[in-house]
Amino acid sequence: MKRHRWSACCLALFCAVGIGVSGQTPSENKLVIHADREVARIAPEIYGHFAEHLGRCIYDGFFVGEDSSIPNLDGVREDVIQALLKIKIPVLRWPGGCFADEYHWREGIGPKDQRPPMLNTHWGMVTEDNSFGTHEFLNLCELLGAEAYVAGNVGSGTVEEMQDWVEYMTFAGDSEMGLLRKANGREKPWRVKYFGVGNENWGCGGNMTAAYYADLYKRFQTYVRSYSGNRIVKVACGPGGDDADWMETVMKEAGSRMDAVSMHYYVMTGSWGRKGHATEFDEGDWFELMKRTRGVHDLIEKYSAIMDRYDRRKRVGLYVDEWGTWWDPAEGSQSGFLVQQNTLRDAVSAGIFLNAFNQHSDRVRMANIAQTINVLQAMIMTEGEKMIVTPTYHVFDLYQIHQGARKLDTELTSALYKMGDAELPALDVSVSKGAEGQIYLTICNLDPQNDQTLSCEFKNFEPKEVSGRVLTASAMNAHNTFDQPESVTPKPLTGGQINGSIVTLQAPSKSVMAITIR
Ligand code: AHR
Image 1 (cartoon, rainbow, N blue to C red):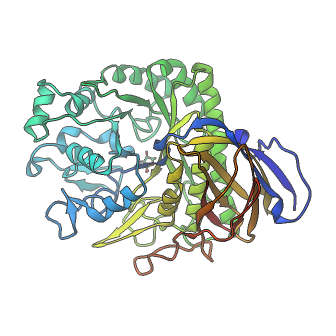
Image 2: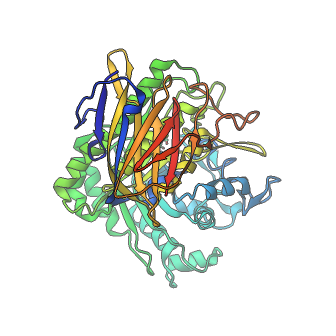
Image 3: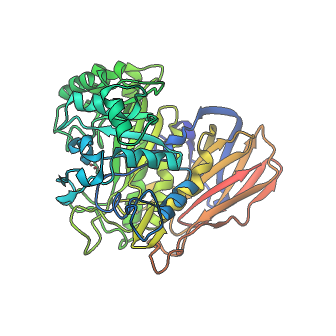
């Protein structure tokens, strides 16, 4: 087995800066942690979420209505609120996705029996009754203690409609919009920190060229104002997948007028037409997903390099505001509802993604997994009164330690996980320092067959105590169901050893771990 060293500063898979080291024993996995070299703050928003009017994410997922027999607070499920509070959800993006560019916010305010229904043309052609609208969303963010990230309609909306929405939500005074909000029962404006000017405008958001969108962006954003002390962060629509031309044009033409630009990155093992099965797969598929997930480093680095040309000081954030696995829909599920099961494979993929966002936290300042409940790589699944959390939820639980911590400089030498002629580092890590000097370490073992022993060498830090949790299972496709909700849950770390400045950890095959070292 060959070994390679990966520098955390340049962790992209094919960007190994290191030296190949020969040798066979797993203990040669080595991580050097420079505890005195803090590189960047890890924005809590990297652990953000996304809730679209799609399938059963909003209705049945978050919102069951005030009259439901399911315990709720103003119509929002209490069990969901508790589960999301536990993982400290920092930001929630809404109402889409593709839905955002056909959403007309005025239809979702005022007395519910007077809200007109609309057709959700992107997602199953179902009727949307608009019972969950601006008030319900922003009140939910307040309940969760999460920042609101509202996506505005560029594709089928007007500049005036967007301007009015921002004023309605955030202006304290007695303008037409301020008075309308007050008449609808909300005296004080809400805090709306993030506002997206369109979504996927190269596709479902209007099929625009980059140059056309850049012009529209400049026009629309002019009227997205900061009112009454609410400093709004304006987010431009960036590329989906690999589209450097889009990023180049939008940054060149409009970079100086935005606070952030988005990118979307979904992973699967097949193609968009046949994405792959969520639960029935072999090790080749497992490897393929790990490989494509690690591809996010390449894309972030490619986009960061473009951004650097127009924004050398890194003022503009790169928001990966949709990411995650996307599988063929579950058998028997409703068309357009994007229902999929969530296995240990999804969890390891999520761990790799989050490590990557941490590693690029100088530019990546927000990321929103798609989507929170019952859709795509969900955190939570609901069925009537029942609610379960997925393996991916547990990854967010484990990784919450990094929120707001300082990323540390590290060097990783990892064993290789090989599949035919292809190879990946078996271990994928991220390291940060908390407010009280404790060190946080998250580790994914991508190899589904072999456990790994990792030796962590601390520079300028004396390890005294090690604790942590480990998420794994015996099968690659292990998952939670309503009958067996705890098949995949984290267990306490065993076997962490301290010897001077070295901490030795055991990473089971196909696992995600979160470790705290004091
Ligand atoms: O998350 C599902 C969809 O994926 C979103 O609506 C869209 O933005 C993306 O294509």
